[in-house]
Image (cartoon, rainbow, N blue to C red):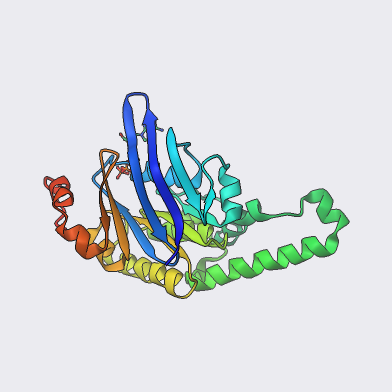
Length: 257
Ligand SMILES: Nc1ncnc2c1ncn2[C@@H]1O[C@H](COP(=O)(O)OP(=O)(O)OP(=O)(O)O)[C@@H](O)[C@H]1O
């Protein structure tokens, strides 16, 4: 298996706080990879470094062999990296369909002027956008709510649309920050199935932050564990469950690994 993402010696400092401290691991193409760790361990900071929201203080992030650490977030999106946020980043008054369409705006090549000059090219782009959005609506079973304003939907469905917004970008690598937070068990099971299908049917590499360790152990091919910004574990679910540093880090947490 070839790595799709290589994180090497990444550190991120906020004043006196080391959010990430010399973290190294890699993610293989086509796998489901989870980032776990106690609260404040640096998981979201790591996703922010991968998506380009934060610039690491030092270290390297290579995507398909290419250094991306200095690339802007939208550039990373065009390379195939999409992100669903922990706190839903949708337009509440707009419909599900419009939120998904808007997500694809970053990928539009034909601006207003070029769109006017090259009608054919713009029209083709529009058809391509619609096709992708419809594919996501079908995949995430959003048909019945396609015209519903997102703000009126129950929380679990809003989370699903948030994942859909990232999926509509047609990524090769999707970053999911707690996509099941606040969901009941049946909603969690459904989201787990969508994640498995993203990987099996759509061939997307998935990076997941999730607090429910049962789900993490069931879904993941590999896991990296962070604690106080440091990598304290990296391996298969079986290896992680036996890792004494990981067990120690979780003592005091309510969860049993
Ligand atoms: N923009 C920021 N400014 C200052 N400190 C920050 C910033 N972002 C994160 N931190 C700090 O970095 C550390 C890691 O935070 P981060 O949110 O990455 O952890 P986490 O593992 O995602 O936590 P949780 O599970 O609670 O979401 C924390 O001490 C946090 O306060």
